[in-house]
Length: 287
Image (cartoon, rainbow, N blue to C red):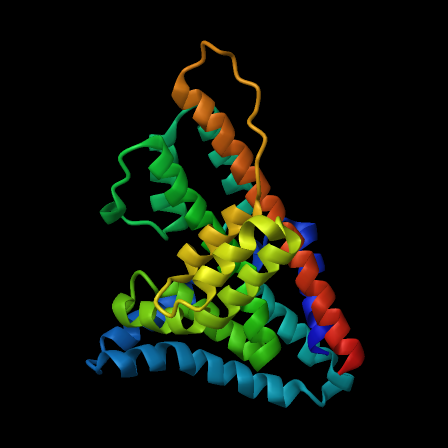
């Protein structure tokens, strides 16, 4: 039933373009505010904020499992999975970034990263177009990972409640006990991020990326965004530079190349998604 719920959720996301129709997070932010006012220690506040909704979801799932041959369980699992997928239209964000690259507007691209993706911070302070591109591409690599792969990983491992727990931690990472939440997410990202990095190597340029994977995968201190960026960009291989007029501004020339790199990164993420859906299907058939 879990695999059926995954397929239904993915079909709905493809039909809608994103899961925005079920992404209503006001209830969780209101619940966070109530927990924050209780005067508890930080670990207890984070546990209560995340685990209370997760436990409630698990109770409902258990109650619905025997009803109507599990159809109500599947319906609730699909709803929870859709809710657990990432926010915003990822493909639209990438297309906007490519447009900014082609126009040489790297300052605007940086501001977009701060406001929309939220994985970068002013402390990064990139001083050149190349540094901005590296920062933004790293943000996109992590955004592409956390919006679907980590969610499916914990859905398959722990069920719908596990996927919900991961999404709630992501929702609270900047506003609610951010330091502790970041530590929890670092631990939760450790295994699935490395699995996706392996998938990048398999579905991308194996020869160019295998050494980068071996250098990064066993580094216990490397953040998921750094790992995915380094392995992912290596898996893109040699990207053909677009034809740009010889008299063009060097920043525009670099912007055209950065746009191509971003497009190829999006394609790599899509191939990886297809690969893991096929893996899940095979697991269902043979296990």
